[in-house]
Image: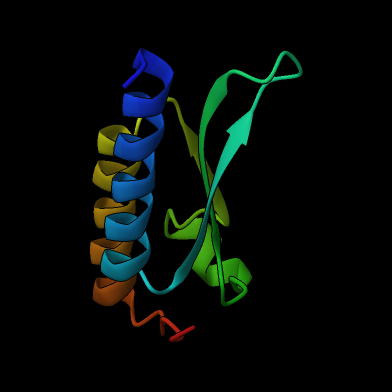
Length: 90
């Protein structure tokens, strides 16, 4: 198996875990114009009110690796729970 194939299967597994763990977010992987992996992007499924934004919630997050994205999503979800933001199921 090539290095690219191993990286691809790892990214597929990470993608599945992120989708299951954070149902309130639309998770995508993006590629650069040269076709190489470019990182992760998460966008909320439910819009934010101005009060949510002023409390520190963000509508989307981009990170280079799945671990960093997961960490930020967990922090955002914890903050959302504290302020009463409702997460929708997909």
